[in-house]
Every structure is written in structure tokens, then in C-alpha cells.
Length: 366
View 1: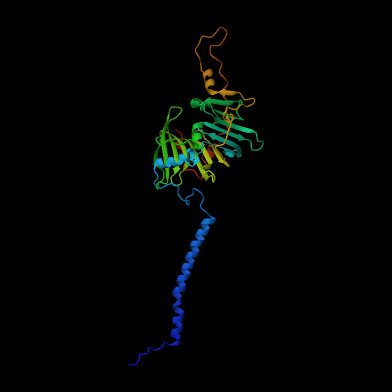
View 2: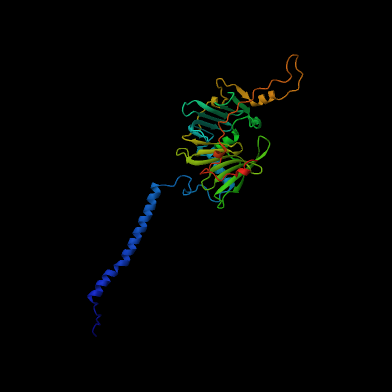
């Protein structure tokens, strides 16, 4: 039985078959090559242009569902340290810039040490001479302004802060400022956690405290739950009217120690219509500092005025005076006042690109 032969296709059909059959394979190879090139390009772009630390594109440090205790433990590790390293109990920077609305930027030196040591020296940008000296130690806090009239160093004990608030030309809350500067750990038993954004990424740690004036206040710490960094500190009255706000930005991690610190602080006191920005450059963590740094300064030609003693001597005293002497001590000259720190009302309300919306002016005052 003979083989059945299949007719050979015509030359034109053979040419079409040879041209059409390889095309699907070529297309697939081209697509795969493009995908690989795109992935390689993305990887190269990520290597050449990594996301900024603590940005939305940067990987999270904490779990999105981190609890209050976990968040506070993470924040406190930066202050108290871990088994493998020390925390931040003090820091100092000689590369600080102070910006007050209506004035040029002022060079400054800032030092802080737990629990109550603080020193801020502000200089004239042209002459280099001192313009502001403010600070605190375990017992006292003080303020000196070059423009103060009469010239003097105003000082008071910490428990006399309510009295000082009536006479100081600028708002000064040393204990709160030291907490803002990041050397005081948080007590987890004192705080409750409240969500601040719908997605839960931003939370607020809230503590109820008694102010030096005897009023109930809310101490609020705003935290990025993803990166475990503090974005804001607030003091509010019991009815949530803003007393003071410090917004923190431009956080950086020290490559040697791993400590995380903001490099920009924007502090506002809306009731006093005052604000200042503190921009911090290179920081020396846990430096060796002499005790003299935390002492009330001696300024030539500027006597020290103790507000507590001044108030006692200025207050009428009922006593039997010796003959020829007044029964009431002569009041001291009222402590000097200066308006260096008070900008115009318009500048206080300027929009800030990294701060949350401010309280409307009509409700900003308690």
C-alpha cells in the first residue's frame, strides 16, 4: 500500500508562515525586556534618590497598630537609651539660629540638660554682642534682655512662675521648654492616647496636669505613629484653648549614635502674641558641661532682681516701725520690660507649612 502524500504548500504560503510564526515570541521577549528595564530603573532611582528620612515614602519604624505603651517606650528609648547605647540626657549646639518676626535671624547657643538645666544665649548678628540670656537650673530661672529698661537680670524660683508671668516681658515656661527639647522621658501612666487623623497614623498623647497657677491644663504630645517621632507639643486649658504650641520638624538621625532629633522648633504663645523659630545645626549630645553654665549670670551694670523678694518688699507690711522710719518698706523699681519678643499680630498668624491648623483667633484666648 503506497504512502499518501500531502501536497506541499505553495512558496508564498511557506514565506508567510516563516514570517508570522516568530512574531509572538519576539513580542513576548520585548515586553519582558521592557519590564526588566523598568524594574531596574526603579531600583536605580531608589538607590540614587532614596526617600527622605521620616517622610511618607520612608519605611515605618513602628507597627501601624502600635499601642500607647509601645509608642511611649520607643520615644523614651531615644532619651533614656537602650542596653546597647546611651540616651539623650543633655545636648548643646553652638550652631543655632533664632528667627523672630520683624527681626533678622539671630545667631545663638542653646544647651539643655535634664531635669531643669537650660541656657539660651542670643547674639547680635552684626556686632556679635549678647542680646538675650535666658535659662534655668534646679532652683531658679532667669531672663536678661539687652533692651530691658532699666537694665537688670530678672530671676525667680520655679515655684514663683505665676508671679513671674505678670512681669516678664516674654513668655517663659522652662519646664515645658525642656520637655519640648527632648530630654525628659514620658510617664506612660500619665498619658492617654487619642487618634488625630482618620487613618490613625497621627496620634496624640494627652495628660491632665496642674499648672503652676493652680489651673488644670492639658499636656498634649502629637506623634507620628509610623516613624515614632514627636511632631508637636501643646499646652491647653481645661476647655482646650491653646496656651503654648511647639511644632517640631526636619527630624534627623545621628549616624553614629542613632539618636533622632528635630532640627527646627517653632514655638508660639498665642495669648502673648509671641513666637520664635529655633533652627539647630550640629548638635553635641551629652557634652561635658561645667556647673557655671547653669548659674544665674552676672552682667556688668545689671543688678539681679529676685521677683519673689521684690514682690514681698513691694507688698504693704503691717508692722510697728521704729521712730523716724517708715512702717512699709519702699517698693523696688518695677522689673524692666522690653518688647523684643513681641511681633505684630499679623505676623503671629502667618501660615506655617509644617504645622497643623491653628485655633481660630476668636477662640484662641481662654
